[in-house]
Length: 449
Image (cartoon, rainbow, N blue to C red; front, side, top):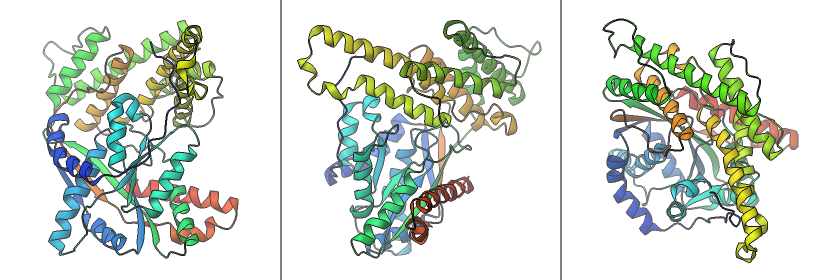
């Protein structure tokens, strides 16, 4: 049972060079033992070398806006900054001050599921947390101060969360653009002349050897756990043929969709039509699941699916981490039991949002349009995530289908300073400038794919 807790405390950044050095030493061993990544390569690293040189000369401030397809992206960014940038700088004869590092923004929820020790580590590495589902003014103030005044550049994932897809980018959140304009504003108020830039960084994962056999095994396991009989197109089908595997993947997806439609229709009284196309059915199911949680928290179904997920996450936290329980030990046993009941119910309703969060970028056509092994694997692993959430198993111990290489690409910097004249005109101009910068950043990151 989830129990009521005092309100979540802000974890202030407290950079410690000894912790950084330890992390740099541990990173290669951690990646070998905890990930499938065996190679990381990057294009246009010289762009970052030049930006760091200008940053250290006091000419610019910049933020790296990186793609966020999966949980290993932060490790890839660390490898980029700690290994690849120094190597290219040395090759070019560019002298940069050590350490080469970056401050970063992370989701305040990470220490809740990864362990409180992660909050300590992130803090000592110069990270600053933010609540994704509300106007977290304390978190924004910290990020704003780091951007303008800290000893390192910044890094953040403008998608706000992983979406499990190499080749689909979720709509970017406007917060990164807003931070850029705030940085320009703060520098001008302080009489400083640095230019402010946002640098798009692409990240893509590829299998070194196509893991069709591992994929077939994963599909077999998912079919078994979901109650599907073995699929046989002929007496002796080529089980590793992508065309045959796609039929199995589609059948599995449709079966799971039907199970969940029945679940929400029977037990939550949602009217879900089954004669629509697969993609339309998926969207309707996600809407129904979000409505179940929104009705419990008395939230209007407003905005995009991602917006609704973020608000529901914050609503759940508000019911578990209660502002009025700063001295939770002072509660009577009965008050504590009632608070625990609310916390547990809130967590149960957030579960519906977590299911939707898994499929926020799924289109229903992703594999069919381009049946690469990467797209097969991404979709199959998202189905694995869903099944394990339903089973209440650990969703973070994903199967490793095969060794991967990471391809990173550094895009051309986007100037925020050049757009500040429009931003400062009035409130409408500010909103327009943020919207246009976010849109341009989205296109820039998409172009890196």
